[in-house]
Image 1 (tube, rainbow, N blue to C red):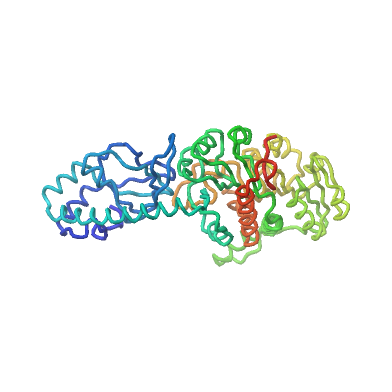
Image 2: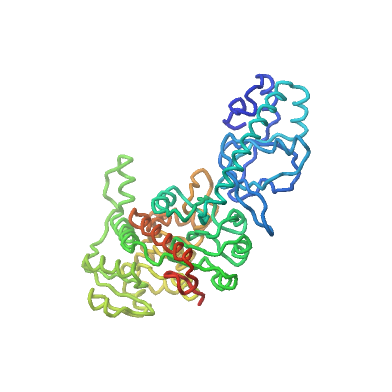
Amino acid sequence: MATLKLSQLDLFSACRPETLAELEAAVRSRRLRTGEVLFREGDPGDFMFVVSSGALSVSKGVGEGGLAPLRTMGAGDSGGLTSMSLGRTRSATLVALEPTTILTVGEADFNRLLSNRPDLSQSVIAHLAGKVRGKTRQLAELKAEDTDGRTRVAFFDTKRYDRSSFEAEAPDSLAFSFLEPKLSTATAPLAAGHAIVCAFVNDQLDADTLRLLAGQGVRLIALRCAGTNNVDLPTARALGMDVARVPAYSPHAVAEHALTLVLTLNRKVHRAHQRVREGNFSLAGLEGFDLHGRTGGIVGTGQIGRCFAEILRGLGMEVLAFDPFPNEAFAERVGVRYVELDAIWARSDVVSLHAPLTPQTHHLVDRKAIESMKPGAMLINTSRGGLVDTEALVEGLKSGQIGSAGLDVYEEESEYFFEDRSDQVITDDVLARLLVFNNVIITSHQAFLTREALANIAATTIQNMKEWLDGRRGSELSNVVEPN
């Protein structure tokens, strides 16, 4: 039995202690994963439930297989009583918005208690009367939402900082729904009733997900990030959906985080900090090296790569760069030299990746590249996890070919990053192996996370939405993403 007490619930508030004890004996606990369906509209109503922890989305079917979100159920809310008691099917679909625990009571047990315990019957009748009044109020609220003239936007994979930054910029023409689950085929029904979906880096916008969204009336995918590798752009175009992104939000934020990783790894600040906390003030094994006079190699000289190059030059480092489209004016102004990738690998003491993830750059840093690197080189990746063959990186760390690695991204990060998994076992063997190395620092895709960057992301994303509302489509949108 969970810590939630049945006596605290309105549904059972009039029950005697002996009734509650018998009821608790019939309760079963069930754990739901994020996106897991508790039941669908039309399923048999053979049990009632109470939410012990977490949250459930309540949705009704609309159109051809679509779902319209009605409300969210949280800890202490109960459901399923009416359908179970009257022998009817479920009237709505319930989906877990986050890891959720529910307490269930089966139909047979509940009916037995109703027959044997009059106080339970009285408590249930009083509760149902209150539900009727609540439903009347909810219908009025839904009607008001349908007629207020605002365009509804469904935000997926949202955290507290997303909500605060977007609410600060929210225009009157948009109504925001902030959803915690990542976008996938399992959670796409939550977008029903919304014309715009706002997605993040680990949301899955593959062909199947896009078809589900389009079938529910979604017409704009507003990415609150720069990368588009998680979007099937040809399918979006074929479905008549526009895709807009945030091409730049704060190159300084990401570049400065890359520098943080470099300095922390080089001077072993993470290890020194942990030692001192344990009362160990020894300096043994904490030797670093002067960055001044060393060589930094930068792969990708977009806004972030150029910003990082200027930082390294400010430290007195020689900077080599690779980019299929060199910015010679920048290189001449800052003192950067463009070279081929082989020279980056062979000559750099620090290699930092700032390239987009494309089929051409996938596993750009593979076994061959690592074998070509300067022995003991430091590898920094604040761009996309798929740029690095992580298994090859592990081998390079074990052999000493890679002296240290700072990773803000990981190619299989979607299962872990942005979430609290502290009470779970990490089942990803490669990630678990990386976490063992004392010369590896992994941060949870936080390089973008500054107040300035969040404000810029919100402002640009909302501007993209407003342009779309103004009737701009396709290439008319300032930050549209077109299929190659």
